[in-house]
Length: 429
Image 1 (cartoon, rainbow, N blue to C red):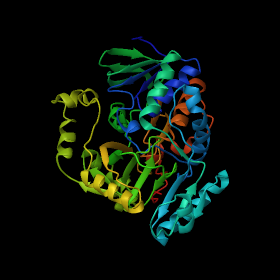
Image 2 (image 1 turned 120 degrees about the vertical axis):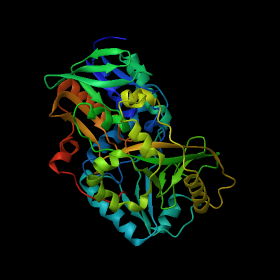
Image 3 (image 1 turned 45 degrees about the vertical axis):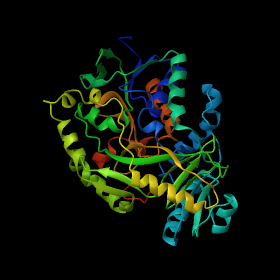
Image 4 (image 1 turned 180 degrees about the vertical axis):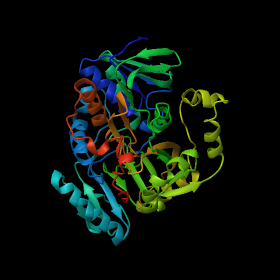
């Protein structure tokens, strides 16, 4: 392992792996550290949607460019990412939900997206065999899908081929600074020096940055996903309905999730950051079930320096592997069978859960930090980071190599929380 690098990346999810690739492509020598395995957590556990649709206004220009990137990524990385440009559809069960989808078209209009509202009849024409009395839906034909378990490892492999060093099973214990600037990181295998460090640590970012005296408001939501047996081809679109969200994979199996259901376990960070999260939680409260139990006390113990987890929190959990919620699995399968009553015998073959890191305004933190020169942050992608991962990596590489990104990142600045410049509550669509 080299003892010096041009850039150090903490985190081996899609944002970190893409950063390593684009840095190496630009001729720099990055080292990526991942405490577990590449794409071991969020980046391999999501639905696989790649969507411009429904994005926050700040995110749309990034996703327009990223959508263009996705179309050539398999060829560029030399690996079939199972990219299919089959569109994305959000279905509304009632007029209130449909009105929220219609309102988003005003966001899309300046970017000339091909998003449009579909009637119930048009939904049935788009997806033959689907059943339901929908009020309508929002459809963006240019959106797509890819296979989450493949993409981040493909970026890491391509980065390594260009000279990047990819260190898995090696936790970064702390980011090291001197005189208000980054000097490197301290890992379980020793100290590595670099003038730039990218924090792409996903749900672990807030804890890592706390060691620098930085307060990143970040909470973690548990989402459950299941996979079914293969079935006849239905659609290449990613679909999110009130009962079930689904994506049919290239082998005919479905990734499915309950359309409106995630789990939030109250932990000490809830007390630290709950006030700034409250507006968005209240607006989207139907999407969460709250739990208070052992997770609170485990998290509390992990902060005590007398415990091994407190001394070395990033070594204590190599891969955060939360259990799937069996009720959500059952609900998702039942929902799939209701919307496709003629699909035939389809059963769940496996299920899993992933921890989603979320910010108070549900958009990421991207860019530098005034308090620590040389520190770049790429985190808080809030459950929709898979589709945005390639452009995040490219922008981090631009910041590291040139000091300036090709797209405007001011809306994603770390300081917005301190400034009170977050956008406030918005419905997740």
